[in-house]
Length: 240
Image (tube, rainbow, N blue to C red; front, side, top):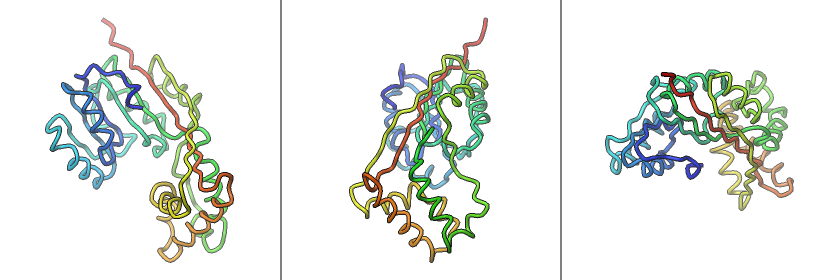
């Protein structure tokens, strides 16, 4: 994803959803004369990113706690970069409108998130378990936590926000975990943590056990059906 981003090296970039800062570091290495504003909704993640990045990059990277679709700045960024974040934001029209406002004229959006049929099989497994006793009562008002938009819908939303030169596409990226233990650990921390947050501690292991047992019967077993939504778009340059 980062390799596909064309940079001159002096851009101002917003990393939207920086997490621990692993990709932010790779981004900064490609910006020897540039600056990065790293944003994330998690204060703990920002503290981890700060500890990881400040020793090597100093004042070229700054941090802000921001819950998307809010953006913290207007007409500043040459690039808004993001990976594995936008599908956690349910209001994509507001997200794209705010990203558009954060970009300087001629600025670019370069992002990837889950989209289309992303994790359809994994979600179906969870929904089967959510309908079971004793879990059903904890999910009666389940609103859903992801927005897995299609490439066509995303393209139209970006145009509606004012972007030009819009490109979107979906690519499959299925991932098979090596063992039942690996699958159980991964889905507990990465996939189903919003589901587990609704359950008392006594039911969490049982919920993961039920999902894992169903994943073992899939072909191939313990496979997560990831689909990546790629998007690139440009804010039109200001007219003279």
